[in-house]
Length: 354
Image 1 (cartoon, rainbow, N blue to C red):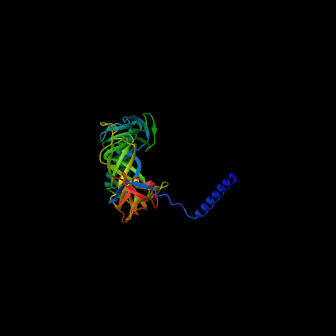
Image 2: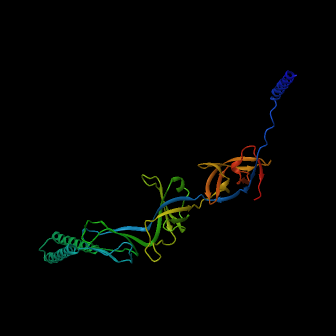
Image 3: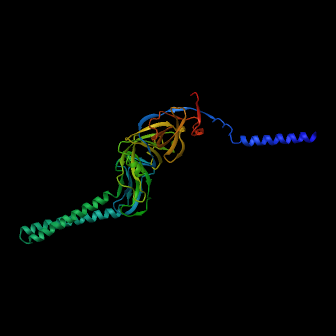
């Protein structure tokens, strides 16, 4: 009896395995696709300009090194770094001993030449000297007059004066130094033509810029502050060895180190230029973009049947918290923002309340 029972169990088990083997040809029902809750945002159309970003240095429009025309020993340097000066203010002077002696010598030579000329005229009138001798005396007098004029000119330029109202950026020499002609003594910034920021931009950006384009300038020295300006000059040739084109931006208001101090110079500036030339773009929230690679990305939209549809797009630029899309959204009126990262082809979606 025990053997029959065991045999029956074995037989029943064998039958069960046989039925299971036959039933293996029919797949179990697939699990239902998960529902992804999403939110969407509208696609806006606009004509915007892609900003040009860069960095440069703040300086005066006219910053010039002032120097003596002639060489000599520096007697005085009255200029100090950061000193605000008026036009005509004396900034430095050479020792005048040697220079004054040259003026005196030239004056003596001129006086002698004038006496010789007067004597030659009298003798020529009496037919004692030839006309050629008279003309030579005249030439000698003219040469002496030129020497005297040159000596006086050099004497006047033995002092450096401020050419306009401005500020002394740097004192480059000290009293007692012997300097050659043209050696910079003072670096001077004129205030007559304002301040500028010079920025180097690549060729792909310079072609979109023009005089009058608006610019915003920021300095690390004043976080949170923005200074307005406009492009005044666009370089026509690339800077040798660098390959960028120099853009000059003039600031609308002076930038000073202190409220009542001299104009600043040499500060590093971050610049955002908005070109006047605009392009038609589609605007979507940045969070709609997925798998960005350079200017390529993709977004999800909802098709007419309610299923998610992937769209490959080309990003033109970012505008605040939105992305300007150059292509890929023709006919699309909304994109998925919330839940977009969880979508795939065949996903079931359910719109969340906004």
